Length: 377
Picture 1: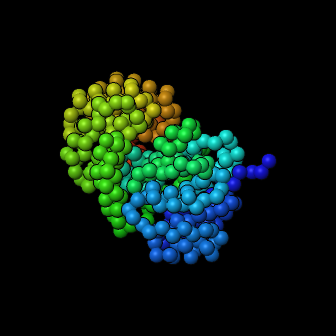
Picture 2 (picture 1 turned 135 degrees about the vertical axis):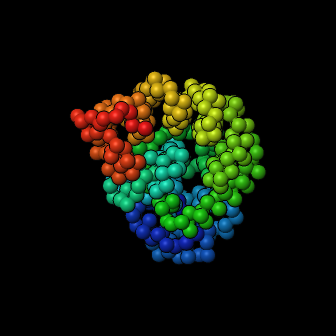
Picture 3 (picture 1 turned 60 degrees about the vertical axis):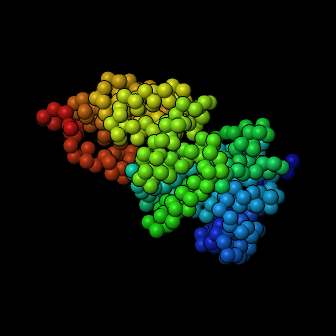
């Protein structure tokens, strides 16, 4: 029986990084389709690298561009990547093996490398991918439907944050997590690039929300844009309108997390706690709702409840640096400095580049040695 063929589908408005991307993934794809949304430069690079170029006049619609590539593909399966992304060499064979399964939609975890620890979902790096993580401080994770069989009617929707998942689910295709992360470097390309990127995406998100005002995901995307733009009042109004919407899905839960964070920052701790407790009860899969609930409870000084919530979250998510950080803060604030020092020593060994730990390291005793003076503020 012939092995299934794989099309690598790439959007590119420029040719830089494209040749390296195609070469890096060379043993993965049987066919590469590059949708050239620029002036033809990407298409020329694609052709010289053995890929097929599909010219597409950019019209502020990522789904339309993706679908132009889908229409041109001939492989049994399609994998999407952008020019600022890659799959680690050690994962290429595993990804190739995935397409030998019965048809499904593969949910990729995207590791978005990001130096700004103020991002609401930022986390430190553990060193699982030393080469890919080299020079990076941390990341935030996202998920997308990025691997799927080529089928009639299986197309993307949404001018930005486009997805194929609704069409796949309508066809009865199951969605399954892929154990192969995508490493994304788009947020590491410098301030000017990031500013242009934010402006472009903000414009498209506003367009998407205007076109689909009842789309919960579009509303949460717009709220995130407003928060980035320093407009918390407008963001809160959007998120409050979504908080009680049914049925509860991942977009609703993320909206509740963002709203709970805003309420905590405004000092409205009782309302935030009620909202976030409901969020984790109705959709307990969203780790950042748990983390934000723990932070709200900590801000109120309810340290016993803090301990309990950390324990519940650990049973669900296992070892996690952000849970460790909240536990560390709880131990410090309640004067359990020896236990805190042990946690800190373990974290510094696992995450040596985590800057947030440096200050605590100076203020806590080494394991086995106490500091005078009681709890650390």
